[in-house]
Length: 395
Image 1 (tube, helix red, strand yellow):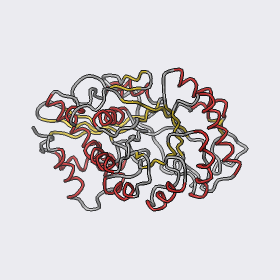
Image 2: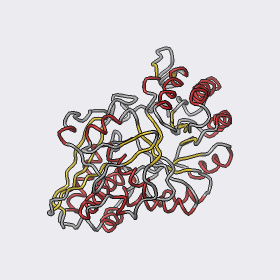
Image 3: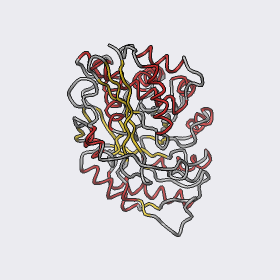
């Protein structure tokens, strides 16, 4: 079997925080008539990502797609300036497509190719459920506080999720500049309290800070969060400094998670070696695909750390992450953007099922679904300007 073509397809996402961004897919064709699909969505950097994938495609032409690990190592080791978000996301997109091809050639699902099931379905948590709970406030400096959140709206939306069968959710109650104020702490805590009161004690809550505040401010927030029994405090500070993250995690009484902006096992190794982070969240579209995220999960297992793959991307990211979750022992939960889910179902040839807070993948070989190009064409890619059009203003 030989690779004959590598093609890139892009589509617009639903509106999320700003005017939206794009999802990027790769399809790899072979002389056996088998095609594999991957995703490397890299918010606001898809032009660079597409160029990297197509450049790698010149190397891939004529290669045997079943040599997955050799191709991965070649793309990572046999180049100058390896690593980083663009190259690792390109490798991820290609790698996912190769797993899809090999599983299809054997007429088995990817989870079977990966060693078989640890579980029949995957517990999921909701993100993006609060899109209608953000009210622009022209009286507040947009750099300092780009939105004002309604605790009552959050409570109502969270209760709707619970009544729909979801058992876990995540949201972002703290925004603004790195150094927080007592007013911003109080406002964020009011939102958390309203949600906890609405959903009761048994539904899991994840609080994502998204590295918006500094360690001193984050420690004040962590102290205030203790009474609400949160499941995790995500990216409480900037992710670049492992020692700072570890010191913070040791100093607080809430579980800390991180990892969405780390790109391979070598970047996760020093973080896990601190034995302080309670959960890691590698992103299958950015950390080198199915091949690398499995190795990261194995490394985490040696430190007794669960894996909850980050997933703010498109439908193939979601499918691939679910196949991973089914095939590793230390899976915790899977992130699902409910505000994206309808579009996922529209462009997939087979739907993902989520019922009562658990997800199952479609039956069939490979990922169990391909991208419907006719459906994709309904959502032409969005134009945007990096930095100006991105939603994170106050760093």
